[in-house]
Image 1 (cartoon, rainbow, N blue to C red):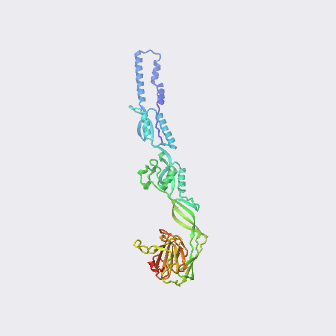
Image 2 (cartoon, rainbow, N blue to C red):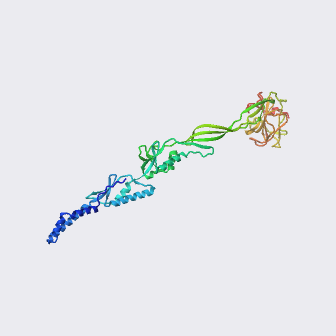
Image 3 (spheres, rainbow, N blue to C red):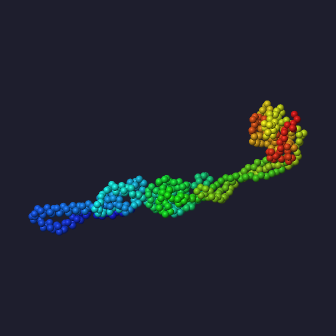
Length: 467
């Protein structure tokens, strides 16, 4: 970008003057006087005239300087243009080596020879002024998103590298995923430009900026406004200078999903109507389903099932339900003590335990002491429940009995039991301070169905025993 306007150098002008002098009338006069004798005063006068002329001529030529200007603004006068040219070439070479790319001045620099009668040379000041005022620029490629300038890169190849980085940012590495398609929803391209070398960014920085808005660094990045001017990002509105790109991928995803089993029922008139049991356990099946899933910047926006293949068929669960309505023997209503030799450690709804709806029975033998059915009946529920631990519920017609904190249950739901039959072993499961039996009696609503745990109201067990 340099524009040089250099006039004739003093040496060339001297030669021209010499040639003009050689063929002037003064030369003819000199030849005429050759060999003639003149008075000394004539020689003195002639010498004075010549010396004066020489001094005048020297002064005239000493008033010619090289005027150095930047963008039309004069920065100083120098005697030797070549020295300034070498200084500028040195600046450009150092800048190119520092940035690793060719650089040139942004401003127009001129050096013109002019007559300045009162001029003064200051080469040092001119060099310093040039060093301060010159802005170095380099040829680059401006990356654009939908034709809007964003960030400069070093070359067109780096624009393609940015596109590859953007496209590969959201590719899944999972074994069950196959990439079908990648699309950049915006047009990403590059156009030639001339920018400060410190504005050039790497492809990795540009890709991160476009996807995450991560700034490559304060003072490094110059962003392009919509008018093509280069400004620091702090000077521009965020919506103008932080465009994002959207990478859309379509993947084929294969998953293995469960096939739930169905349940069928069969009825047994030899089982009481509140009894049921699983005759054939159900097993879930497996199926492989293929989806085509569309993602945008890694976020799923659409999914379509394209195929389905059964790997394992499910097994139907068969539940056997009783239909018999016979009511078990109720007995006298005065129950057998459930722990032979056991004694009460905590009574029914005592002042210290107003929420205690049963009685606690302990035995010196502790854990493993046999627990007996208080009367004949049908086991309607067994299992493990929170603070009760392992428990058994027996239906006796008008009442239910509950046995809790057991270490082992010997009977299961649906079993018929006889009065005095061992149904469990004493333990401390659930919320128990030590081995004991928590025993409850609850009044039946007549349906014969246990239902909700607190559906049947508790009564004091001590009113049912004859020991």
